[in-house]
Length: 115
Length: 113
Image (cartoon, rainbow over all chains, first blue to last red; front, side):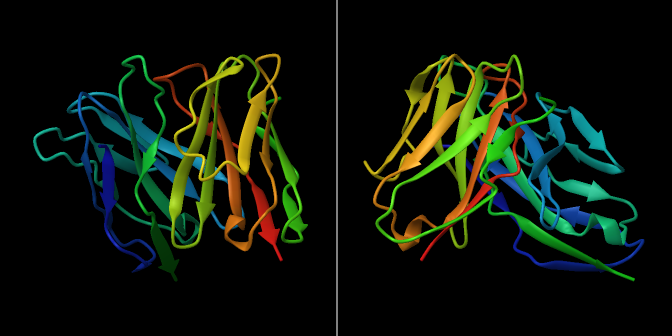
């Protein structure tokens, strides 16, 4: 079946540090890949996505590249801010094959950015 | 509305009572999903609707859980005879259809005491 593995948290960084949150996946077919973010007290928000191999999703300074050869979708940001403190979820959906494209999530990685 | 709307945002109920959670998806979205987020379990898929039918109910944890959707819009998740292990945030999401980006509501926080 489909699965997503994320690096364990929490991750604690100083402001302006470089961020990498690792995500690898197992899936049949050609999944679409997503990063969702959950800020304190808020619901899940889509951060970025990529739908095919070598696509790069980007938003708010965050980037992730769909690497089919390594089955990875690592999240990166060059300079984090305190406001980036949140829980980040990697997720995938199967391309439509006649079944529901439900999301399979990783366990989430909590990021804490300090001054 | 502009986003997925859920109610109530918070619900405290006594063990054994029934609860109903409501979801109003983004206008025009034909697909609707329910997920559950609980401590120690992460995010779990519960059920998926396409229009008013539910082709995938594989995530419903027991027969105490049921959901319906009417008019291709609003959905209600019902939990009968609630147990303490049902305490979680219940998230609703919608999309234009399978394969399209899924957008989440802010969730309904259920506490069973």
